[in-house]
Image (tube, rainbow, N blue to C red; front, side, top):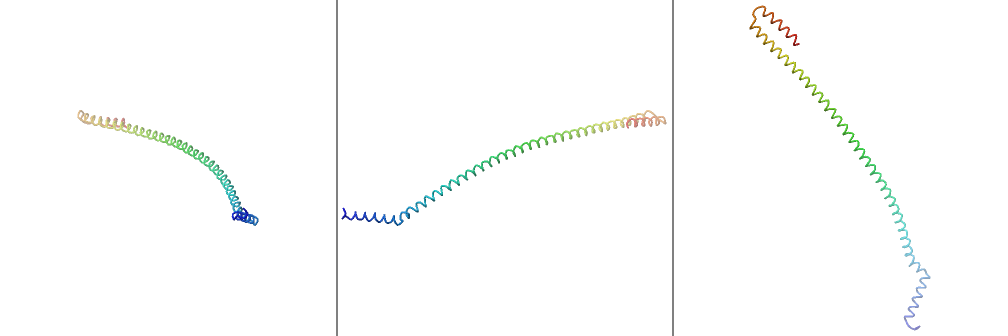
Length: 161
């Protein structure tokens, strides 16, 4: 067993590993792994911190969204109320306008009726005067006829006006 080559290779290998570990080779092999472990731990801590910040931002934005929705609803409600008020006001103005226009139209109609009645009375009086004149001219002659005619004509004219 001491004379076999495999034994001496194994002894040489273990001596080499022992010397390498004594000289710091272990630290050289484990050091990058430790550094990588520290880096991973640091990255995980950074990720937790970023996740916490993101959650805080999410909560803040959610609160802002809720507030913005409430404000938007208030604006919509206010606009709806304002529109209803404006519609009621417009309806009242329109009703008032229609009432005034109807009253003005009725006044014009009444005025036209009065004018038409006056025109008819005037035309009837003038026709009666002409008819009386024709009758009197035909039946009366002379100065008496002219005097009666003038008196009648003046009397009719004063009654008309």
